[in-house]
Length: 77
Image (tube, rainbow, N blue to C red; front, side, top):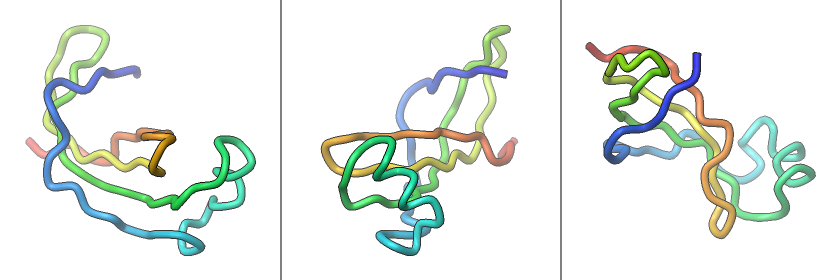
């Protein structure tokens, strides 16, 4: 199910950086070189059917490239 982030992502934390990111090679091939980090944070999302949910999100990001592969991991409420 698709979703849109409402507001901003809070409580962000780096889970892994650099070579510790398991798909580091894939990220470089697909999006280019950068200081890749796997991140997690909390946000409110809106599903396509209009429901709002507070969730924990995981994603990868690099400076100059931005966030990629955003994934909802668990519901917080």
